Length: 612
Image: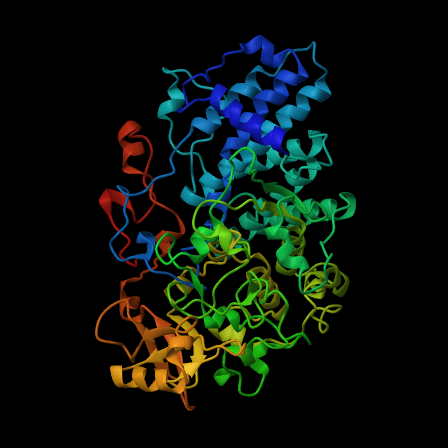
């Protein structure tokens, strides 16, 4: 793994291009690359620089999601804060590098199967590149050759989504059929199964996007969904991959994200780190610091979607609305305690509750991607590998595609969603598909969905894949961007102006107070404030809407005693979502360079994100 990391770094220094018409610079020459397998292998390592770093990957889902409260609203959903002048991402240098390799990989002294293997890897990365561009911008120019400075294609119009995505599928098919590597002990390289995993992801996205956005294109939504089924099914039947279960339901899920070496039973490909090479990431720093990150804190409505261990919805439990933090965390899907700090969570041998002193707004503080040792907290020191592709996602892609096609069976359910839930310790509803709608899930999240199977698969994607970078894409393809406007609610607080032992560890963790008198009274109740203050945070709250922005507020529970925490509710009105936001505007600079590039509808002439 260390050798691979080193090679990727060095090749990124040797081979580079920054625009469509610039030839990648090389200190070794074309012949040395394309006349041997070693040269081809070395060149394709440069493509891996397209992938996110560990520091980027651990932060891929900290805004533009509906289940996290943060300290700064994304400009993309802040009214009139985003336009073509602030848009980015119209960068094509990676594509130039890929096309240069594909065009020149023709040396007949190297066997066709060897050449096709490396072309397959190149076409995997081209599909990866274009999938990102289409998700962001919709129609984009399709370019499958390296261009020179006078090439007319530099001033081409945008090609249709239909054309581009069919080309993407062709690239993925070629990659799946021609990449020869089927195993990789390091878990860091593109294999045949990684290609199939990306294909299943792309096909599901495109099929559901076309369905829920009512796109009338030549290739139907059902065709794309059928492609997702076939790609995921082949991987499931042929790869030998399986869900990682070592350590049991209480440990196996989080182990996928906290180990230095990828758990390759399940992880198809990961971004790895190395202390020896100084390739580290900053997950702990970001997920614990009061100032370095955006203090992402999960919201109570999302926490409510975690099932009970018997497989029934938590919100079907009598009195769930007023369960305190300790009570709500009992007998729940074991992934809850492996995703956020819950009672029993330990750091350096000490019980550790959510940190209200400098991090959490809601009480639901994520731990999924970071390590438990406090020594990792104050710099980019993390060594844990973070997955890019894993088998659980493929199972969920398979289940959702079949559910959308109306062909999912009990057997399909058992080997996909049922298997994932079983890994998490859930005992009920794992062998047969659901027949009853969870009214809470439907009413709060998906009021337009009446199929209990689709509802439960959407629940499962949220729980299983949270913080891995899927949620914004899921909301966009389901046409549910309006969920980004939901208020940010936190844990239930039974009483104000009293000390609270959140995790029942024997130490007070927080006081939510409304006045100086209330705070002093609460301090007295601790018995010895000089001792208690070592672990007990004090948080000033106001009831209702508060008197100014960005205050920690509490809201009375309707029809019951107690309160819910809320965060930044006075600024809810600033968040907007309109149909045009399912695509980003083409950057104004790109249109200046190529006037033949048209702007996405609604973003023309400097229009902002005004909610329309």
